[in-house]
Structure formats: structure tokens, C-alpha cells
Image (cartoon, rainbow, N blue to C red; front, side, top):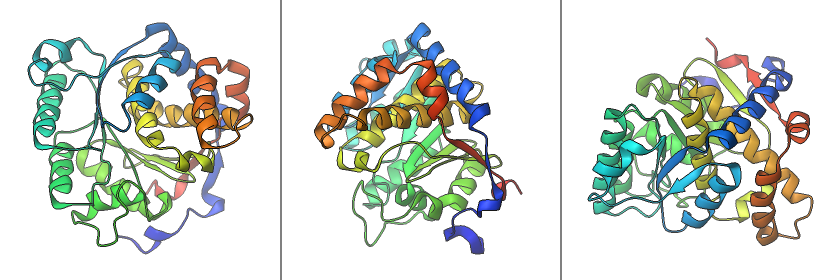
Length: 292
């Protein structure tokens, strides 16, 4: 780890490139709405409802298939696979690995959400095994990405909640991207996205999302949908998905009275998000300090 691993990027190395990214975000959302890609979600019990509704409101078609008996027939038909280890049990891990293998054989992209990766030895081992299978994108919070980087169980784990900022895990994300070939996204006050060379910061979203369970799971599912419609550019698809989700939360927050109404407003806003609103509100910056 370099000395600056726990420091935010210096402001002189931040280039606001939202004017370049915003049209791409709108193009991705338009393509998603037109194509309505089928996204297989092997996700946790807590998140299934919000994951499905996020995908539906954005224009994708979600399906919750996690049975090993169905995977050989069904997974080749999907446009992307989303794997989330939130409520992990051994038989689901077997299904996840089978689905990943089938997706790869079918040349379909897949996305990993290593929920609470450092909370237990079983969970960490499972996440590391899945990481070795080459996800197109990995999205986690600072603690989850750092656990994958260190390969050790966290002493002060708070489960799915992070004890680190996204900027604390920048070098870890860069390293994981380089060794895995995956795009790595770190959620936080500023979402960090890197492919091991390029780095952007996504500054959309509202802090109250932390008070709604499964919003991290939902945005990872949206990333899978964006990658499904632009599989050759997972870095760009990841950054734009994070920004679109964040803008929807900002719009929803305008009418929210608390976490429950924000949850509804988020889904509504994602469904009604228009070109003008998105182009005005995308906040993505290129961060130059990592490109070395």
C-alpha cells in the first residue's frame, strides 16, 4: 500500500468531466429502457424486493433464479448475472459458482457484490473464490473492498455497514482491479470506480440512502443492467449506473419525509428520470492521481 492510501485525492488532480459523462449516462439509460435486458439476480433475502423494483423502474427485466436445477437451462438466456452474498449459505454458494460458470461459458457478463466480505472466514473465503472467477465488475463499500484486498476477517466488522470511507480503499481497489481484470467500484460519499488505471469519482446521491436497507445491493444490480447493454465498456457502464442511481435519489429526496418515503421516491424517480434532469445533475470527475 502506498502512503496516500488513506487520503482523499488532492483537489488539483480532480477534473470535473460531467459534461462528457452526462450524455453517456443518458445514452446508457435510453439503451436500457429500449433493450430491457434480462438480469439474473442471485441476491440476498433482504434485498430482493428493492433489487427487483430498481431494475424494473430503470427498464430492465429481473429474475430471481438461484436453484442449481434451473441454472443450466436458464442462465444462458440472460443478458447479465448479478451475484450478491448478503445472506450466504453453502448451497447458495454452489449455485452462485455454477451460475457464474454457465454465464462465462455463454459469454455473458457478471457482477459481484461481496456484502460484509470481512465479517467471517466462511464469507471471506467465498468472496475470494468468486473474485478468482473473474467478475466483470465488483462493487462494495470501503470495508468490503479492503477485506478482499487484505484477505483477512475484520476485527471490528459492522456487517454490511462500512467503517471506512471509499477514499480509504482507493489503492486496494486499484490492486484488486489489476489482479482480477475486474472494474472495481467503492461506494461512499463519493463513489470510486477504477479499472486499475483509469479512476473516476461519482458525486451523486444523498446521505439518507444509508438509512434504507439494500440500496447498495440495488445499485449493484443496476450496474449489472448497464453492463448488460454495454458489455465492452464495463468501466463506463459502472460509473454511469452509479450516477443515474444517485441522481434518482437526489430527485426522490426532494419530496421525501424520511427513509421510507425516499425509498418510494427513489424507485419513482428512476422510472421517470428524463434527459434534461440527468444531463443537469450528473457529477462524475476524472481523478488523475491514480493514473500512474
